[in-house]
Length: 435
Image 1: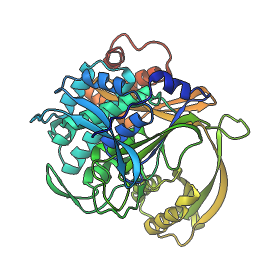
Image 2 (image 1 turned 45 degrees about the horizontal axis):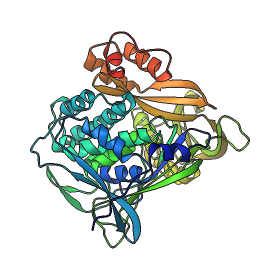
Image 3 (image 1 turned 30 degrees about the vertical axis):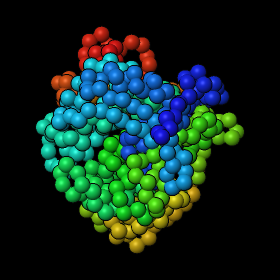
């Protein structure tokens, strides 16, 4: 007999999170990630199943039923999401999915998160298949289960108060190995779209012995949209743990994804409104590297987890112009950073020193603009918002799509993200935010 699970009522969740401090989240995808696993974990952690059902019911798609089933995976208790929907031959493209989400009149933060996740997924699929974004038609984005998973996760995160949480940390992602069948035929694991999404987000990948697909494209898109940073659990006071199960129960590992929900303790022990942490600084001075190498090297250093990387012009022996390459990195990435520097520059030595960094608590949100979204990074000094920076590439894309100056998009998104008054009276942003 199927055992159905119930989730915490909103009042119970509010009481559990009564401690001071903003909400915080840690996602553990060390055994993989899929959209249904993440949604099941969020529901298991206390998100309202009724709220998710009500939000999904507003989508103009085929009727969908959602249930949670109690299962065991490798001897561990978990919640498995059961999605019941009629067979459909509809393969929706990105524009159709975005229109469905927009017409559902979901809360602005839910709309923005879901649209951002679908855009991440679509851009990756378009890039790996070499097809323009506006022209792609592929079932991975349009499939009904993907719509339910991505919108459902946005609704569950909103119910838990996590869509505007400054600390949403995702651990290293297990991706698996082998091959898997897709709508495009057999694909190597991890499939190209997963690698594209995770590499673009700077996500760390975890080694795993399983010869199977562990991370799906929709799972990767959700993790990339959720993460304000990657790594071990942040400083938080835990309130609930959610465990979501995949469909299979392989003998070699627990096919689960875990989430830890709590309130942030994201400040130093002495009460200062910033975080202090030791980092290593790697420096080397070079005068014989093709300057076209630098942008790619800097991106690769950031992608493997460097906190920052930059070049400074210097004057070297006999008046030769050169570059001082500097990298800030946590101790765990020091050896990898040094290896990349030696490989790409040919330098014979680097200087490593220890520095103390103070950083602000920060988050990343997605602000709706027309039928798209712009990611915005925000920094907090204690509880006061002091920095709001929209992602320029996102702003440029929506500006070109809406045929407006990119400076206007940057200003409008920054103003709304800062919460400084009402949105503009006219323009794509106000239409999306007042929906």
